[in-house]
Amino acid sequence: MSLTKTMNKGNLFPTVFSDFFKPDRFFNPTWLEGEFEQTMPAVNIKENGKQFFIEVAAPGFNKNDFKVNVEDDMLTISAEKREERSEENERFTRKEYFYNTFSRTFNLPQNSNFDKLDAKYENGILKLTLPKKEETKVSLKKEIKVA
Image 1: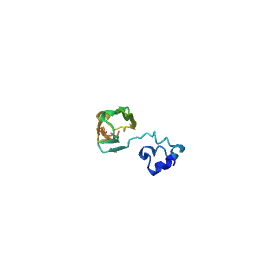
Image 2: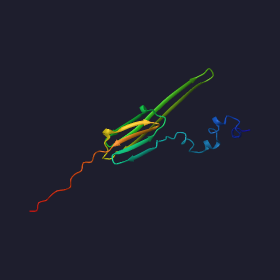
Image 3: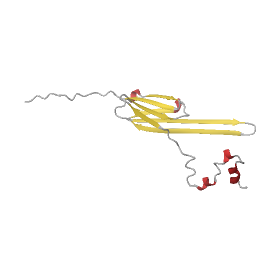
Image 4: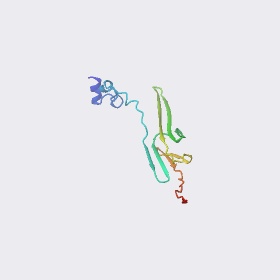
């Protein structure tokens, strides 16, 4: 019986090897694209009369993994997380590495007050609150004397 037929019947470690040894996996020219695909976190942007609200769905990070920078009129939100785990036993040694990173950049509106930008990370969501600048109202009223 071939390895493929054995795996399909569920006899030979199907949870470990079945996805890796699928025959169409190696003959499909795009099989590597899914293996190394980088995901970008989802972002919600809302506003009301006084503030902008930005929510970034980034579970698995810690608040210290994030960097929030404002330069000119650009807001950049980035995060980087690295982990390394080792487990040694008398029969085996296992090492696992994990690395995740992303960066998103947004143009800030002219009426945003980035000096008062506030960021909080809780329950896997980075929440930024960006107040709007107070608009100074220019009086368009002027009296013209007729000569």
